[in-house]
Amino acid sequence: MTGYVFLEKEKAEKVLKEGLAPERDGIRGIGFPSVKGPYIAAFFHPAENYAPAEDGTVCLRAEIPVREAFVADAARVPDKIAGTLLPLAEYKLGTYRRPFIVIPGGLAADCFSKRDNDLDAPLLYENSEKLYIDRSFALAEESDPGFRERALKAYYESLVDSGRAVKRSGEARDVKEDLLTGEPAKKKERGGLFRFFSKGNGPETVRIIEEIDEYSAPDGTVIGISIGKEQVPMDGIDRKR
Image (tube, rainbow, N blue to C red; front, side, top):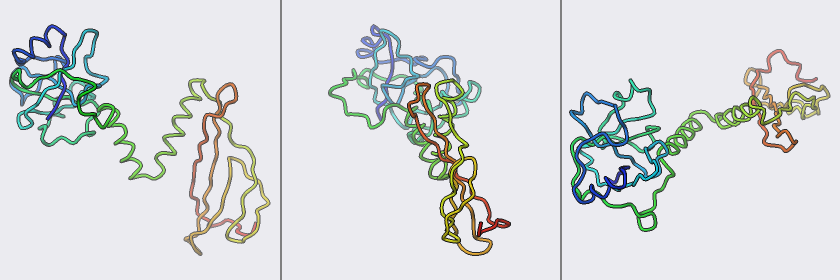
């Protein structure tokens, strides 16, 4: 498989002619009990924003022997990184937030080539960290349909906490038509828009409460709207009010 190694320009030119001997390029000071001696650290994507891409650094494309390499997650706290090591052949893209490839031993010169942004095959994702976040959101949404709404509200609330947004909520609004009676409700409630509907008769009847919050920039421009939903049993409620 293809990986990417970041090296200083002079060293990169040498590697293209002589290959790369085992040494800790990129990730330093991380040891693995199951990997004897120094190793080469490579990455899945040339745009990894946590890779050591300093001024003068060159990104080389490397053909990596899958059966001999491993993957670890640099996003974990230092004393936990070693425990994330697993064979490269078993790794699924997006599983680790900041993955790096551990290659014991060296790589010959013919394993390396210069990366050409125009001619190389396009990559289908922006970088490993964004792929991890997108995958995490997709999995959370799959297991919890209300996840996106809560995540959006949390983002808006963070804007309020930092002074970048103003929150307006709790205004009195008319209750919409009560579908249990077919008549408009007259009572006003606080905390947003209230809507009733029935899933059935008796104990299966529920009340859904929608609470709407509006978030605006300090100049009054609306940033977004959050709608929270709460399911409340109808027991004890006057259904004809």
